[in-house]
Length: 300
Image (cartoon, rainbow, N blue to C red; front, side):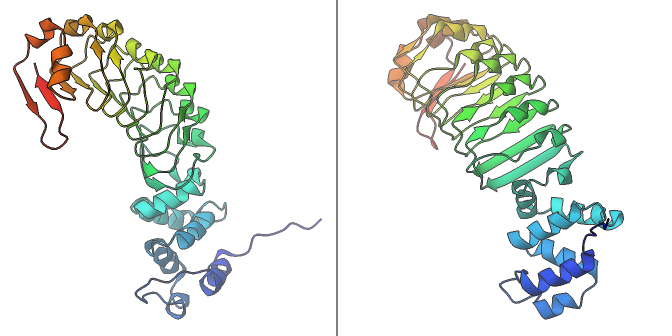
């Protein structure tokens, strides 16, 4: 029985430089020059090129069992310093390259779904997925039990798995600028959540699970299609900031005035202000039009 052997790393790199390498646009690092470099410098050149094809090739090498450990360590550290390299490695599904890390930021993620194997990232405390084409948060998100902050803003999200409710340590959740119309009821399990940002989505009502989040300090709902704020708002006893501008609100529950710690409220305009409970209007210290966004800011 013959055992197939993997091609030597050096020969793979040579073949790639001759057939698949993408040189820099300014002419630096031409193939002829790259072929004369030692192996480490060749791989550094590929990572620093910022070309996705070059970076994907290096990632394939780094996950090989026979890749030299000391060289692997130094190259991974270099890869983590490049936003493009991090994104490419993540998109290609090489999550083993991120094992043990506590923070991960991915910008301009180009795929509609996250790679499989998120459980490899069980030590993550902060995950940021900013700007991209992501359409859903999958069930595997529930495996990231150490997360304290999750940013998935400026994506194309239309669904969130109920497994998000397993993130018992989560304190900050940013889902701004997506296509969400609802949140799973399981968000009620986010007992430590302090900041929930849902701006610029498609909510027609405040998701019911939110009313169980008694630790909430900030709730941002600007830029949705919400028409009323119901009595359940009084359950958010720690709420300090509530943003409701660019909605279609026609009624506020009188119980809005029962929020003891409310410090700031954002509305569309003076007509919204007149809909507020009289008791809340009496607490106003100042109100003004926010110059940047054009809606009414109220301080208590």
